[in-house]
Image (cartoon, rainbow, N blue to C red; front, side, top):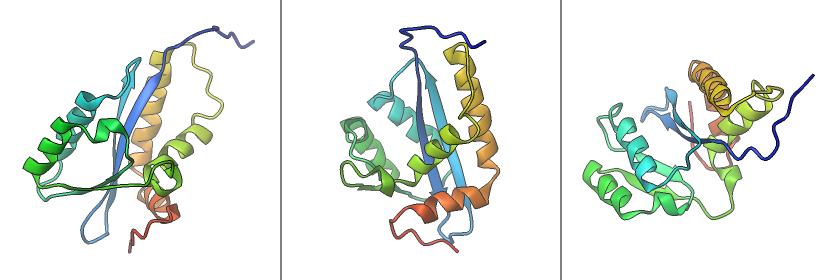
Length: 153
C-alpha cells in the first residue's frame, strides 16, 4: 500500500557544478541540496564560496541565465575571484551538462522511490549524488552528451 499526502508543497532544491580540470583528465561533481527552500542569490553565492575552497585557479562558469546567477553580489564575487562566466541561451537545458546529472538521478536511482517526507527524499538525493561523485566515466558522459564543444580526453 502506498500512502499519498495531498497538497504537499514541500520540496528539495538543487544546485550543482560539473568541474573539468584544465588538462581535461578529471571531472568532479559538487552539489548542494536545500530542503524546503529556494535557491536565491545568497544561496548561489554560498555555493560558489564553497566551490572556491576546492580551487586555486580561476574558473570558467557555464550556466543558464537565471536571475539568481546575475546578481550584483555574485558579479562582485566572480570579479574578486577572477572567475569568468558564460551564460547559456535561454530555454536551452539540453546544453547544460548539469541537467543530465539531475535527469540521471531522477530517472535511475530515484525513479521509483516513494519517500513519506521531504527530509528522506533529500537524504536519498544526497546519498545517490555522492555515489555519482565516484563515477568519473558517468560524469564524463554528461559532458559529452551536451552539444556544447567541451572536449574531454
